[in-house]
Length: 192
Ligand code: URA
Image 1 (cartoon, helix red, strand yellow):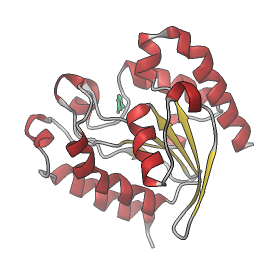
Image 2 (cartoon, helix red, strand yellow):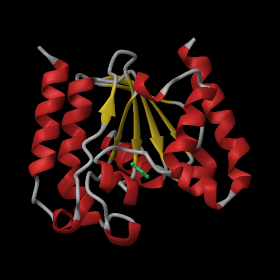
Image 3 (cartoon, helix red, strand yellow):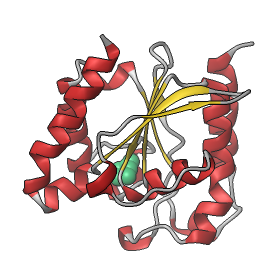
C-alpha cells in the first residue's frame, strides 16, 4: 500500500472535481500537502485568495500565523499534513455552505482514511464541527472546547482530536492568541 500515491490520486480527483458550484470560480483547487510521517493532520476550513492562486493550503497571513503556532508545538509545516474541509475557495472568502461541505467532504474522508492520522488538529469552527460530527461527538463551542483532547478509537482509526482557534480568527481578535498558544503547547506535550 503506497500512501503517498493514494494521496496523489485523491489530489488528482480534487483538481478535476466539478461536483459543486465552487469549481466555477477557482483558479486552483487546494487538495492539501505535507508529510504523513508523524501522523499529524491539520484541518482548516477552505482556501482563501492566496491559497486559490497557488493551489496550496495556508499560504497567506493566516498560514504564517499557523506556522508560528506549529513551531510552539515543535513542528515545521512540512512535518504535518495540512488540508481543509472544503478544497475550493468560496467567493469573497464566505463560509462554505452546508451543501458544499456535504459534497466536498468525501475527499477529506478519503484523506483521513488513507493517512490514518494519530492526531487531528481541527483549526476553527467549520473543521471542528465537521470532525466532531463525523465521529459522533457534539462540538459545543470553541471557547469551551479549544485545547481539549478527544480520543477516537474505532475499527478504522485510533486518533486524538484537538480543536483550536483558526489563525484568521486570532488575527481578527488578538485576545485569542494566548489561548491558542496554550493549545499548541499542549499539542507539543502530547508529541513528546
Ligand atoms: N484558511 C483556511 O481555513 N484554510 C486555508 O488554507 C487558508 C486559510
